Image (cartoon, rainbow, N blue to C red; front, side):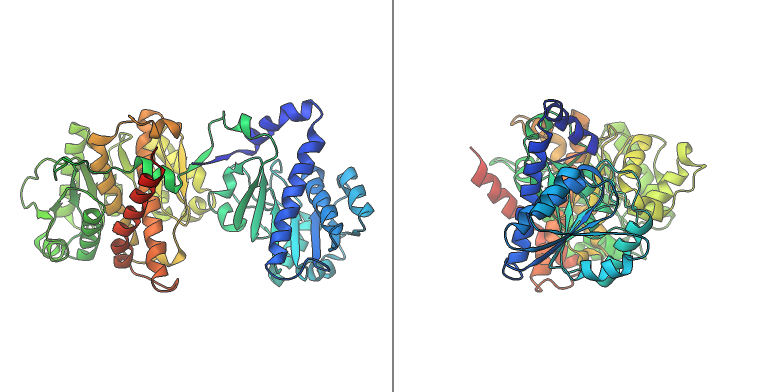
Length: 525
């Protein structure tokens, strides 16, 4: 599992080293790791000798890391320039840089345009203006400089610890931000690098170990991200004597006479995700489409049989389907059954939900949901608000509803009511297509149904993720988000990285699951 921490957690882990006089050692380790990554980026493009590197230098330790790294690069024959954005540059770092032959330029209100042209032309530009302790974004001449560089389109940007202007704790972005190709971060990943909009500015993230990792491992991460080995361990898998009922039965209220495709997509996606049986509840027009695609499904025209989980909402329209949703919610509350609540069912929630209900809004739906809740009814929450602060709002929604909340996006966030958050980002932008969310709902419904009776921790997989019992539903949702993203990426690769449909995502799911189960077999002791 990838664990991401707040800036304060990182500083707390550093404190014993700083108190014992080890700060200089930590800085040299960070600078060396930063320099090595710059070397790797240059070698992708040209020879090292004579390559040009410019470092944007702010106050304090972040600027010091950049200056020491640039000094190391200068000693390897690169042409290095430091642009000092303030008078508070790290003294020892600046002395080392100048001793190595680096050129020093100073930013002032009148030369930002001239310096921007020079910076944008460097083979690598190191952003060492603001670190994890900064509050707010760049101001004055530094903000003007970064805005101009971004407009010019630099060759390669390597961010030192975090891109300047990105909140290391929340992922919020205070523009302007120099969007990085690579972010070299020290000690541990910062939470703001794995949630949007921050993740979209960070590029590829490289972690440099500097000696504080052991104390960090004792802290609860701010954000978790499941790796393939984690997925392999927690995915439900049939045993030798399993049969369709023990593998989970999913009840689905989806689609309508108008939106028949939504029902067909989510039912088929569920069937392809390993569930033993799908019971479909909906109008005849939708049922015909569902059964033409998934003849294994059952159309329940009357009272449905027993289910292990419910999926309600995709494509739901009209009083008849809304009544079915309400009936399913009542049944789920009475039986303690997990429920996936998507799209048209989000407006039908009870005042308080259990943690095994998983809500799956996109940003606009989450804004509508929050605006309707009593605790936030007087505050106008917009889609733009949610997209700017997704970590804050997904946590707020989970806390206020009592449900687990999966916020769909380029980085999909899953929040448990306890505050535990997962972030998964394995997809491709081509997945922003009609029906993609219906496929995700089907995958999640199938995993929930399979997990209901199998959700134990006999092998310690969930304990290894540092989860309490109710938080396990957040892990199930994170697994579904990862499988969905991986399926989308796999489907796109079949077209050389080109566009795809929701049906293509759905059809790639069994192959993705198969590869994850194979990973489990390879890594099992």
